[in-house]
Length: 447
Image (cartoon, rainbow, N blue to C red):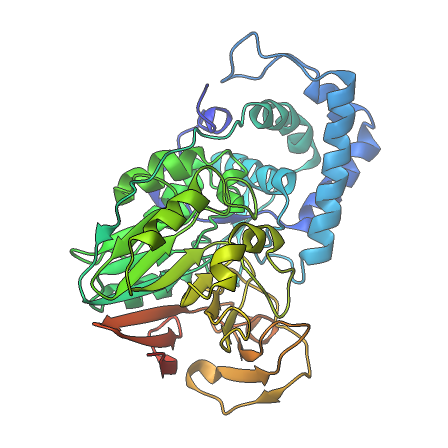
């Protein structure tokens, strides 16, 4: 199968010009409307033309049904973006495959053709015209048709060793290359860590360029530290090819799920992205095998998707697959991303585990508007914790609020970025939540 970026590698781009490009609803909608007004059938005809440069000559054009589906997907993409985009020029990436692929493709083509403009809040915004949309439609359609899932890779049944005293940095939804993301990496690099964990999502769809420029290039470079990355829905929108071929190769990570163990702890990373919100492959049996040999070690899980949520949809499939372990209170803790916020949950009353959402490391999420609970005192960067109680069987806890000082001109409209540190000291675990510049805004010794 051809590389996922074949349509996007025709024009070389200087390394210092590979800045994150934002494809916004406002501009995209305006130009799509103009393209349809000027030539109502232009987009449909574009998908049914011969394959563009960079693809094999036998690449089939769209059928009438496929062309109609393309137009339907485009309409849905605009609807998704309209609902999510709060401020033009700030990155928005809905959890939708076609929308994310469209944004990746248009961002890349805009950068190649120098049709970008800097925005005050960070990065560049794509500034294509209606002719570009028609011209890029065929290569977008052809590229999407080729994106099959990368072959499943099997993890070792034996956990990798982990020192009894080690600090782990946890980042979730960090792969934007913008806002607080680079600062988080800089701060982590200044400290001593033995384990660096990413809970998934490189935007828009985990293409080779995005993985390299928005993720690997900026990833903390701590001497001697082991890096691990969970798979996620955005990486899998392109079939996960660059996640498996670039990220895992760079991290010397055998598979998209992994385990590390010392005398007191078993840390397990799960892949909930290969089949969105589920544990694909042999993961359930593999995890059960690990626990069978774990002895009295405490078990901590890491994944992209959530088992439960105070604000979003709970992880019904994950919970069903791991029901035996949850009911038996076999899990001490679970850290996840996917929902863009930071929340420290109370211990789950039925399952006994400590849940943590760490999905705020780089994505520009719009500030929650809720009057529930009570606010605490302001900390560094005016961060504040909102204490909320149990809701619909989901445990209460503390939600991080405050401005995002890295979105210039829009600070108060977006929630703060940041990361977590887990400090393992024999059988003790201390948790710390940091602002991107490393300030501690929460600390608790769990055990």
